[in-house]
Image (cartoon, rainbow, N blue to C red; front, top):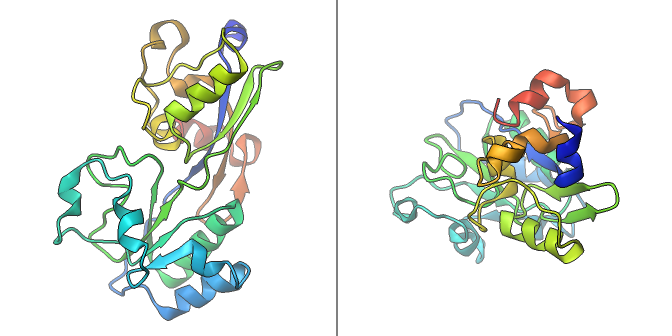
Length: 230
């Protein structure tokens, strides 16, 4: 990355979850719920995991769906929705899903018009990142840490609150999630001068298939390249 781009535009660091792909014919089991609860404080599990019997299940599922055809009754729905507040909650979901053979879908802004972030033909859980949306801006060093549940609009607003001359090269739709946007490259109106959003990422943290939290150094350059759209 050109050093001049760092001076003109804040560098974005983000947290991205890679999906766990597996096949299973079983719905979510009681053992998954027990496994998940064993990895987090027992008094908080009910606030983090929503089953189909939870009163908030439907509203959380529908909250960020942009393609309304996926609200139709025949569309497969997640067996449970995980709404993590901490990275450890994501780790618990990944570890237990792998153990029980349940697919995972992850969603940030919901601008997935193919429904790949919240639909599966086999039983699955949804990790919705809307609670993981903190933005930490360091104007002096021109670096920003932003969690993947934040939207582009929230990121732009946070930068504008800190500086009138800084920005970030990404898309024009304010409700697009940072995680999904950057993991697809991140095309925007400033790309001719500053490149894609992914070109301005210096580091990232992910939860891998084994539940480990990895940064750029520990994940390696090949995976770091892949999670920014390849």
